[in-house]
Image (cartoon, rainbow, N blue to C red):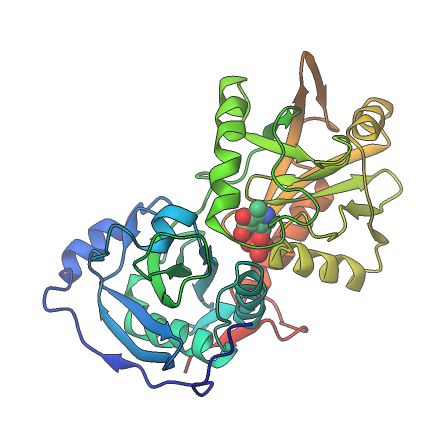
Length: 368
Ligand SMILES: Cc1ncc(COP(=O)(O)O)c(C=O)c1O
C-alpha cells in the first residue's frame, strides 16, 4: 500500500561522535553490562517520506530525539521493532545471527502496521555498518553480545487516525551480558486467565510496541503472584497456550517428541523458535507445531508424560520452565529443574551462534 519509490539500497553517511566514551570507561561499563542498560556511541538513522522513499541514511552520534509532540507514534503507537545480536566468535571475528530473518519479519510487521517496508538490503547495511563501528562494545564475558534494536516510528506531526506520511527508522546498540546471570535457572510461569495478548486478526504476529504495552499488566500480575513470567492463552477459547510476554514456548514429552504452538497469526514467529525446530528435526526428533491446551499441560505434567518445558527468544536463548501457577493451582514440570533436552538444544544453538560448532544451516552472517 505504501510503495517506496527509492532504490533498495542507500549509502550511509558517517558522522562520528564528537565525544565517544573513553576506552577505559567503556571497559569499566563492559565488565558487568546487564541487559539493555549500556549503550554504544552511535546509532543508524534512515528517513522515509512519500516523495523521497528511503533517504538520508546516516550513522551519527547517539543522541536524544527531537520530536513534535503531535508525532503520530506518540498518540497512535504506529511503531515496530526488532531484536538481534552480534557475537564475537571463537576465532575473533564478529557475526550476526540470521539477520535476514529479522529483516523479513520487520517487513511483515511494517505491512501489518500500515508502514513502508524497509528493503532487506537497507536493514542489513544499517546493522552491518553500526556493528563495524561499534565492534569494541561487544563484551568478552560469558554470554556477552551486542544487542541490536532496529525500530521504526511514525514521525509525521498530525492528529488524526491514519497511516503517517513520514517515518524514522533507527538502530541502537546495547552491550549485554548473559540474560540470566550465573546461567539459566528454571523459571516459574503464571497463567493469564483474564488478560490476553493477541486476538485473531490482531497484531500478535507483528513485533509492534503496542503488543508489549498490552502485556505489561499481566506480567506485573505474574510478579505479584510470585512468578517470573506470564504465559498467555488464546483470546477466543482461553485454553490454548500461546506464548510468554517475550518468548515462544516448547514442550518435551517422555517419548522424546517436542511440541510448540503453531503460527496461526496470534504469536510472534520467533527466530529462535525456528532455529530450535530446525536443530531438533536435524537430530531426527519428532516436532509438532500443534495447539496444546492448559488442561492438557496440567494433566501431562501430573502424569509425567510431559518431562520438560522451555521458553525461547533472542535475549535469553533458552529458558527452562520449572513450574506453573494457574489460579490457586500450582504444578511442576519434571523435577522442576532444567531438562536434559532443554540444556542440549540450548548448548547446540549457542555453540553455532558463537562459532564453537559448524554452522550447517548458514545462519551466521560474518562481518568483514
Ligand atoms: C512476544 C515474543 N515472542 C517470541 C519472541 C522470540 O523471538 P526471537 O526468537 O525472534 O527473538 C520474542 C522476542 O523477540 C517476543 O517478543
